[in-house]
Image 1 (tube, rainbow, N blue to C red):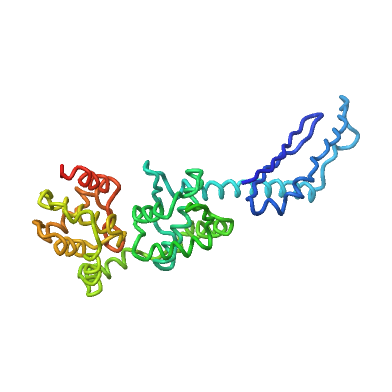
Image 2: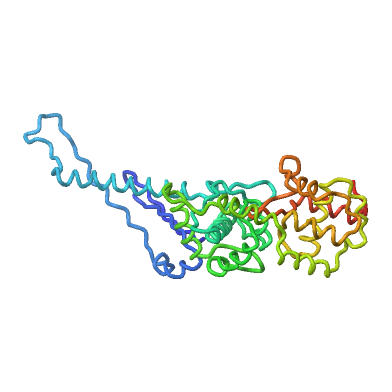
Length: 337
């Protein structure tokens, strides 16, 4: 942002004015000539003091006509209303009202309804608002695309289509430099439109929960296409091929292992269904001792294992950074603690 300032002060023998204006790099070229050529107002001549003699005036004291007095009063109220409205808008549209830092670099959304009419719109609006808030709260661009994917998972808006929708919004509203993301002027205008709708209680966006209930039973079954996926994964090399799964003595360790192998090692999915992960595990490794029900219960046990697993609105699961570090220790030490 480029800031133009002009100060205004008034006393008995001095008068000056102060104005603060901010312009983006894009718009500063259009106003630079105007601002650069601006000459501050010259001091206003101080009116002569009126000497009041201690005697009864012959005529009543002069008063402004009612119309003029009313006009001045209305103008003062109008100016005060404008200043108050601007201040309210600034405070309402502050990024801190919509996101807060989680201590790990990810922003957590305070209001999860971005007033999108469908799931795609909700995801794209989240992405735009997230980058906007991150730019302000961290005072730097979003570091990379993976950060946005992780933020979407953490905030519960991620699914297999998220990356595609993110690319679309990034091409229109982000400044992309060396893999980082920053909102461009068109994006800031779009943010203002979204925030206005989010502040409107009469506007209700797409509800993820309804979609989840409708698809919950269908998503639990392994489809023919997913079976084909597993066969393709089995053809890919993995550092785990020589790992002895008998060292995994609990269901949760098997779940950690399976998700790491699919998501981080093979890099075929960003999140995966429990049943799909288990079928892959049993087909690739011959020493799996855990039953499918126990595997699924461990993976979906948010009460005890939320520090290891995250869940998307599509009922897909992924590993937290803590879980990834734990599995990497297994690889480095070739043991399980």
